[in-house]
Amino acid sequence: MSTRIFPTAQDAENAFYEALERADLEGMMAVWSEDEEIVCVHPAGQRLAGQAQVREAWRQMFAGGPGMRVQVAQRVAVTGMMVAVHSVHESITVAGEQRARPPIVATNVYLRTPAGWRMVAHHASPAPAEPAAAATPPAPQGPKTLH
Amino acid sequence: MSTRIFPTAQDAENAFYEALERADLEGMMAVWSEDEEIVCVHPAGQRLAGQAQVREAWRQMFAGGPGMRVQVAQRVAVTGMMVAVHSVHESITVAGEQRARPPIVATNVYLRTPAGWRMVAHHASPAPAEPAAAATPPAPQGPKTLH
Image (cartoon, rainbow over all chains, first blue to last red; front, side, top):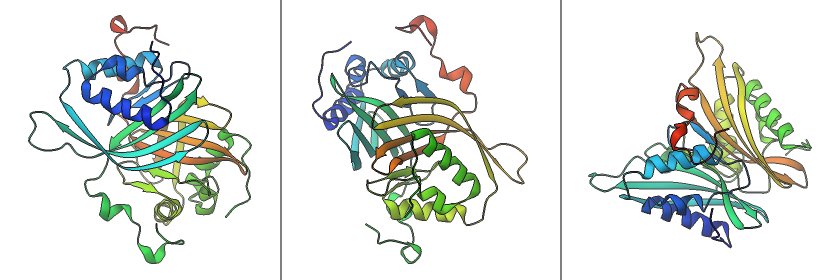
């Protein structure tokens, strides 16, 4: 489907969000693993499994063309030799809308394959509106130093 | 924190859901990696990162004691030598409530560590109520055979 090689998981992630902004279906699918079972959950959407379901959902989402800006922040990464798990906050702005959409939290999982790093899972869901206040547990009860 | 060894990712997953049903904080934290950055998203909750935040959220959730039954279904797994990604549907029933809670879709990521398989990410979010109808894209537009 694609010969594009991503030397790092971050390269694959950058291509994922570029394709999302460009509404570029082939660019999007080039990020995903072709060999593995793949899993995608869009905010408040059904779990999609396998190339056909994942591609069809992106096709429908991209049908109206580009118009979305995505800012990615607060990345937390677990990175190994063969796997990378990135947790990010997505701020999405849609052209023509007065204000930003509610924040999204996404878990992106990448595997190192013979064809470079590829995405095998994307799970996105609505996050509460005020991350800073609620994300930190009360310090006195915490068994370890907060970081 | 724990010397419990999980020989497979599925063993770790079984222990995760057992601890959830038993409201067993130590059993729950024994499933999680101690060495890696860990990430946990509860349904409609903030992204929690690191042992302290993850543990504190489970502590609060378990404070009322056990009373939850979790049925796990429709597991899709991506499994490698060192990593396993499980996507599951959770049906949660709470004691004293007349009907089941809305369905949850969860992405669980496990790494093989020197201390056996451990969870590094759990992302759970509400799923639409009728999976069967919406999860299957329209066949005629599908670029590949549905499975």
